[in-house]
Length: 268
Image (cartoon, rainbow, N blue to C red):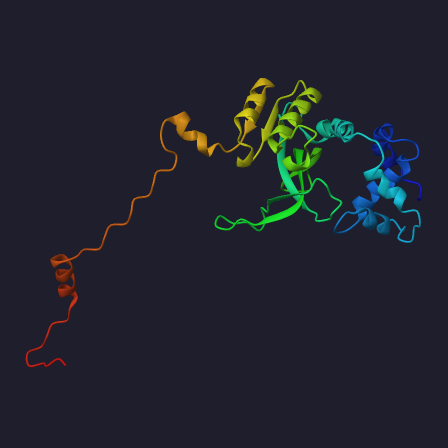
C-alpha cells in the first residue's frame, strides 16, 4: 500500500490502538478502499479500487472483519469524540437517531439470518418478506455545510438475531438494543442534552422509561397512546355517505329537468 498523506494519518491515528500491529495496515487499506469504492462497499471492491485486484493473499483482508479481535463499541466512542465538537454547535442538544435495516443475505453458512418484513416492497395491503440480517444502528444527526439535508452518521451497530437462532443466549429485540445503545450514549456524553428520534416502530413504553431515567428527550409517534392521554379518540370514524333520495323527491327532481313536451308531438 502506498504511504498515506499526513492529514489522513492524523485522522486515523486514534483508532490504531484498537488493532494489533499486523491487522492495522489491512484495516487502513479497507477503510480507504471503502471510501473510494463506487457502488457496493465490499472487501473485493475495496481491494480492486486500491489496485490490489490480483493480490494473492486477499484472505488476510477478509480476516479483518471475520477473525480479527477489535471492539466496534470502542471505535464508536473514538469516532464520537471529534464529531461532536466539529459538527454540533456549542450549547445545542445532541440529536441521535435509532433505526433498523435488513441486509439481504441467503447463504447457508449465515447463521444469524431470519425472515423479516421488507419495508421497501411492502404496502398497506400487501406485506412482503425477505431473508437476511437485521441490524440496529444509532446515528448522530448533524447539519453539514455542503448539503441542505441533515446527515445521519452511524456510531453504534448491533446484530439482531432471531429468537430461534439464539437458544443459548438471552434473546434481545430491536427495542432492547436501542435501550442499551441510549444508555451507552449517555455514559459517553454525561453533560449535554440528548434527543433520541425514532419512528413509530420504536414507540415502546420500556424505551420511554429508559429515556426518562437517563434524562433523554424521546421524539416518536405514539398514535396508539393519544387516546389514553387526551381522553378522546385521535381518529374519529368517518360517517357513511347519505343515501340518494327516493320516491316522490327523486321524481320531482327529474321532472324539473325534463324538457317540455310540445303539443302534437308523438314519442316512440
